[in-house]
Length: 268
Image (cartoon, rainbow, N blue to C red; front, top):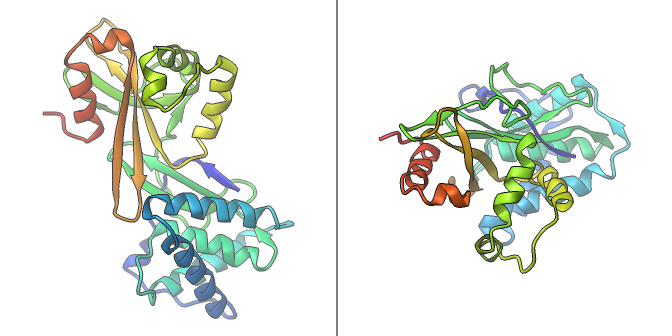
């Protein structure tokens, strides 16, 4: 099962070679090879989507949750295999291969992926049934979605700021999307109901795209003015940038450029 959660610090696998737990070496290499094959077959921009689909299918066949010891052994075995891989292997490939390795034994873990707000960094990892990250160092990172009515501002310019995507603003996001010009930009041919939008937000949080709330700082209090979205392409470590602005925000020339600069970490 895939979850969108907190982002934790990267593991140190790239700087320290680990010994594979006994009995896991060959199986871990095979699991990693299967993940790399899934990535390689088909357009690169859909690689993560293919991996997510494969992992969800794999998880649906597992009947027993992995214990912390079993999950840790699997992660360490995959990290050992990553040292000898000729292809790019980072947290995405490692966590996916760990899930495949455990699934081959009928054991399940949760596959999670998320983002750190400052600076923006993607990360993927696995968790045991009780939500404990496996073989991950602690990190004081923040959740990427907020339910607090008080705005949290992560990045800002003089006129604009970016904060977390907020579940309590779903009706506001939906209202912005009712602008007749937006369905065309999103490729939709008909308006969406609030109920469907609320359900859609849940699905958005399970995907790989990264969303922020754009705030207008030209008022007495930070005012939500749009949504900025990054659509990552892990194969080349880039992301497409999309911004949706409320009609009232589009009338202010500074809002769009400021949001772009904030999302890209440039406050000039």
